[in-house]
Image: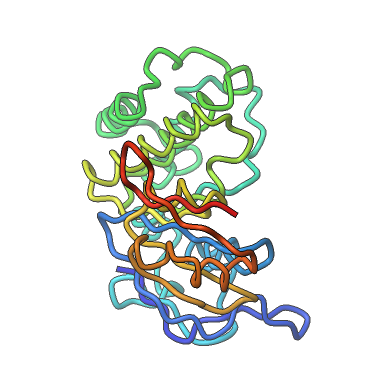
Length: 254
């Protein structure tokens, strides 16, 4: 479990995130929502140890994040940034294999357990058929699934995703979100992801965490957030809430 106590991050005497008290548990999908600049990516980077908190503390399983070695932390947490690195010279299976760095080291040799982890990651993400294809020649949805496979190869307990739906069309957005939820259920993964589409967030996430101007505004089950009053507070836009005619899920319309 991640535990944040009065956590915050300040740069150039300006707080990007302040006084955050939250918990994230394994086996659940959390959606970070809010307007641009609200602190969503900053929160994710704190969990990923890309930033160090300048206020309060963050613990994983009661240990401060700084108490973990790099390899120890990689065994617990996998992070996929918004801007994916270029991988033009890598085949899909080579990229997925990089997820075993915590086991093999930079120049280490693959052991049988590493090959098993790679095969399982390819199977889980439906990317076996892509293994011999160049990563940067894949479609957006295929590329996202291969990068997810790399994260799964780490065999971590938490998956941090910064806007995994960026640049995907609606079909691939739905496919990727369904995959994320399935992986969370099957592997007991805790997933924390930044997501901009409030209706997709409400449909696929177990809990929503709303940030505004670097502060925690509200959090809870989607049905508690999907109200006209709450969404108006979060986004500054009047919203009408209706039930989907087929699924009966709540849908927000500006």
